[in-house]
Image: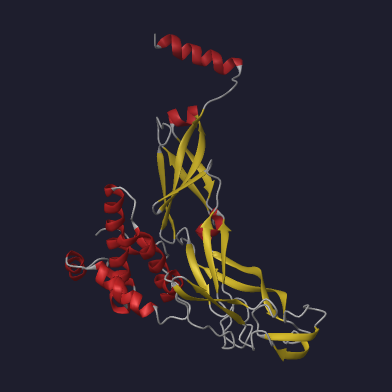
Length: 356
């Protein structure tokens, strides 16, 4: 198996354990053989292969030791041998059995079984994921700036209480959830949903705070300082723990994940592999005769490059300069005139005549 295991599960290399578990659950339900009824044999076969792939990927990435080895060395010989005799259905069965004990389980909901959930325990605040567009200059020189964004923080007026006269909701008895029991021909079905009277908080506020309208939270603008050396990859991620939304009931503050995306003028630049290519226009006579030209690099350094005689379109000029692991090249584009003076035209006619 040569495919990237993270790509198989549709997650990034910085994915948390919960992200890995969640991705596997969703894909396993979609491609499980028991859910392919009514499809063609070709579709069933394709789903079976996909189910094997995602199960094998999860078996590696869910094990801390195997995951560490994979991140460092890729697929090892031992893992290749395991792939040959790997039983995805058995692993899925064990996994599904464990998931029935998970309070927030996708499988439990799918099979119509749900355990009672409590909103009273401390819950982590919401995490934030942001994409930051970066220029050629920042790609080469690094990112050294503050990133500003908004979070939900405890109200500075009521300090997160939402107001005065806070009481336990009598409709859900402070649980934040309403449970409804329905008798059907198949037995008893029990469904739970957030209490509509207290909004799932388990509390009723008599006198709501005027500033936050009883939510206990307000929008607050904050910033983090980013310092990343030049030459980073497209999609580079940086995690800031505890920089997300504040918890609503005493839990941990959420996190902030920044993802840095290349943004540059594609008519002037191209980035392929570990190289940056800058297009440079050179007059046709300089391309024929050759010349030296002073250029300015993204870090403001001025250097002189040599344009060889008889240079054509797409001639590569290596500057022997690097920004991190990114090499920097110029790509010649022959600049043809749209107008020439009579003297120049006469010279060209003379050259044309001598070559006929």
